[in-house]
Image (cartoon, rainbow, N blue to C red; front, side, top):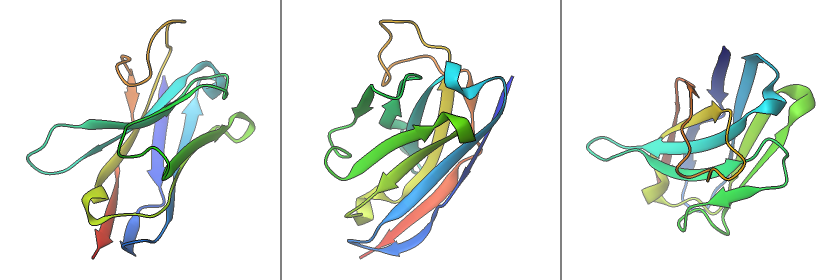
Length: 125
């Protein structure tokens, strides 16, 4: 079992930055690939970014590319999502998720077994 806790959400003006954290406990976090997702009311959850367990492989949605960066510190059992140049359309509840991914499994479509409770990000115009 892995428990995930997100933090770092909040209210920020357009153009501002936030850093989300996903802290894990339980099994060794370094075994797990991690994805970041977001969801707004009435919309499906969407993939934002992801990082493989070996820290070198990352993936981003088109909307996140160039503005968001995900990285991890396995010694601290934590994955981060640095979000810059935020836009009002980035407003959502952000979730991190972890899974034991297959070698060829893609981060954006992987099956994640563990999910955090989510953290609200609100970007004002």
